[in-house]
Length: 349
Image (cartoon, rainbow, N blue to C red; front, top):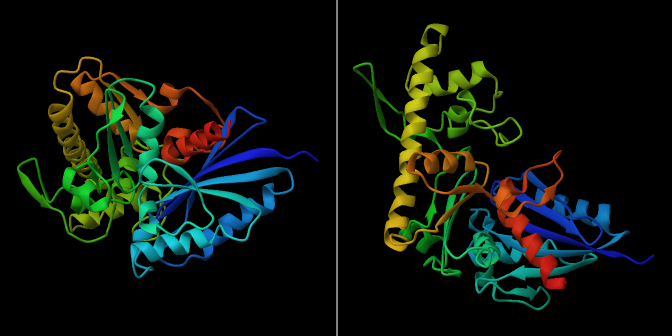
């Protein structure tokens, strides 16, 4: 049987593994996001890789393009050892493996030893794919934990970031997201109805509780564990948010908790908006054709911020307009893996 090619873009994070599949036979992509807490063990990721091999090897040539940010997990003694350990899971399979390096090159996996050049390269697929589509773009990927800000000017990526350290210093990487981020990292104190509410700096609740309560995130996109391991029900959500402020939940406090949640969300929007505005001011102040492209599970926040500032906004799904399996995740939710899959397919064509 003549096997067709199956192109898989991998974005291996510390908390979630994302992969997107495209093929020669169909023009529909399939994106998956799997809870995979790598700081506990490599065994679950190993299981995911094995399941891909078993499912597709008889009918397809499985061609992987691997990127990651999970090398930072404290299960590893160093980032270099993290990259090496993750890549080892793809060895000795019927795979054709490629890696995505810091200089935007798709390289053969076999014999590659410059492990640090692969660390935290997942975000680089975004400008690599988008830079040919429009002259001036600011693309924002808000995920469960982090926000990546990608700057494309005159069809060139102008980001100064080359690792997470420099990304944090340039504010091209923000450690804030819509699911796993603890509330105390967004705001410390709130004022409501002439009362002060102090936020306890403890992992009682996360931003997923806030956005779930306010119906900002869809059920499918609410894919992380809760802070206390309890359900994502309205009652448990209200309990967690109450605990952040040091009081027990009761029905009489419903209105107060909703109002506090809106204030937390407003502070989060301001935090992200302030950084985006500073990048626009520094890099695109005289640009009239700037497009804002939102992606990630938190892209609805970029839509809100864009409307407030009269920016020309599109989600990644709208911008690329590609067909996808609607029973799974939207390509925008798994943007780096989705774009890596397309880059890999283009590489082979």
